[in-house]
Length: 111
Length: 115
Image (cartoon, rainbow over all chains, first blue to last red; front, side, top):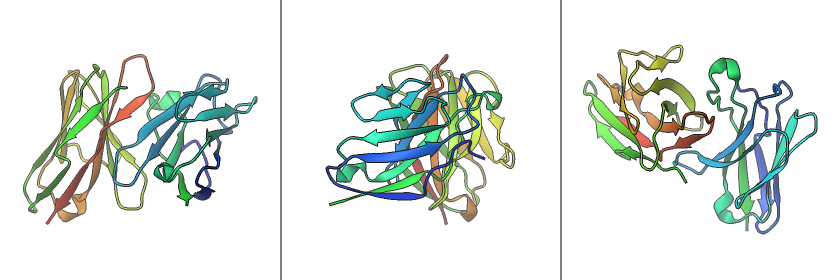
């Protein structure tokens, strides 16, 4: 089973910020949080990852709580092309740092 | 960024035939490659992990004699679906990982339809 839990779906208005939450309450101290997204009928696309500090890149920002039990992916100005399934993944050391994909969050950006 | 390609992007084959899918890392050397399968409206399921020059490690419930994986070089892995049946119809996705990193780079996927 995936080590993370996410809401099954969310809506966001175009141009507004999309905040996607993820719970990973059993995360270990040296395990990273990765975010990917999958647009329909394509392979997953890497977005961002982090350990304990907040991270930002050209696509998104990642906010990790101080206790590291949850995180939020922020798309600052969502566009229609951001409509996708977003996966929060914590590779587990005992599993060889392999990825276990949960159902993710289906984000719909509405015009 | 790191680019992974897959070929073909889609294939239709008759029941009982074999199909080979290629996965290539175009601008980096991948120490580990992964093969996933995704059925409609479901998430990705890991099928197997392969390291260059060694035998693949299959996930529980995946038949290694049916899904043959070859990882002959640091830039190429192949998945052969042998004696394909309609229930093997699915979206097959590969990914590649650079040594020392947990990050995976995914290919665009191959849609297999077995008639």
